[in-house]
Image (cartoon, rainbow, N blue to C red; front, side, top):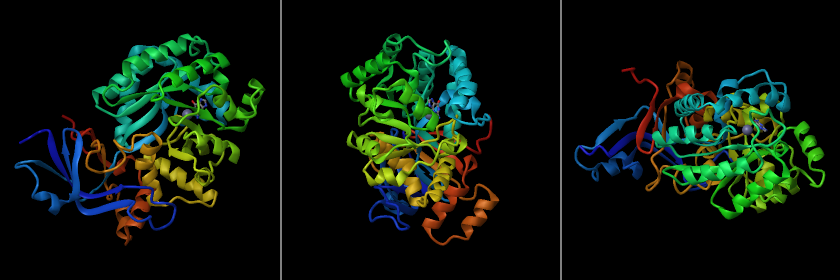
Length: 441
Ligand code: GUN
Ligand code: ZN
């Protein structure tokens, strides 16, 4: 038997394009196979089709994994998450700036220690795979060792991950602030070591405007200009107090976004987390440069930051991605994030459908991160990152799904009722990396 290939057999759902916002997906944007099969060779998808159609083409003796009572989808993607904040999820928060000072900064200080960072990275990746997330854009701490630890752990598991060292040279405890240009040099060393290696990419990570000087932001812009295939991630207009603080710190800028524009940080690979308190002019400027807003619904609800108007972004052509923002977020799970997105949308009169929800979590996020030729869809040539959902993961979900008659209803009910128990298995690069019911050896 050839161990580099296998077939996963069962129902499968994938997006091929953006299904739109309506109750019925746009033509040719989704694919559902009742008895489907994914043929995996050397970590990549060789073919996806009905089992019967593939059966005659398979090599003799190929291993067949039977998921006929499950539902397979592309691995979930999280466009903005802080691995160093896992331990402070659900810390009584009040609002952003207090929460940063009281919980976030003390927690991140601990990542100066290599052993602590290594254990933290492993714990975080275990949790990600448990909820079916195979790719994320990740904030590490300001300590280079936190980034090396993260990339090493992701590399060992052959995951596709994007991560970067936080840059911040002011307005934080001494144990967290870096040297203005030293922090940028450390980033360049990390880029040289990790960017483009295996399935890993680097993202420049100035925390947000208030914690970097103009000099540091300028130097980051210089690095981005010299290597436009790098990513960049930061925070933007999450909280009204934060917006007012930025206006005080950067009086020369006409608004918050202008700070990032002046320093050359807004490009097609830039992700701005939150973007709640923006006007249409700012949204248009972001859209023109091809940047994306990471919508972080559970975090926005937890910290009372506000309701992100997803359709106002869409209307001006501004891409949005979907993110947990743990530890501000209350769920690492993509399904939990979708529940938050639905609730925020419902309050704005733009409730999310199951089609749009699962699109956002997979191909939509892959597109926002320019990875849609590699991940986010179940198609020949894609990397074999797959989540296996269990429609009968709890008696309640089994009962609820037995009452549905359409795929649309089933997807929506799974999105709204699902959690980590719903993820029966996770595959990354063609390997089984999580199994819910695995028996301990
Ligand atoms: N703004 C600056 N830093 C952070 C952070 O760690 N979390 C959130 N939610 N917002 C931020
Ligand atoms: Zn964040």
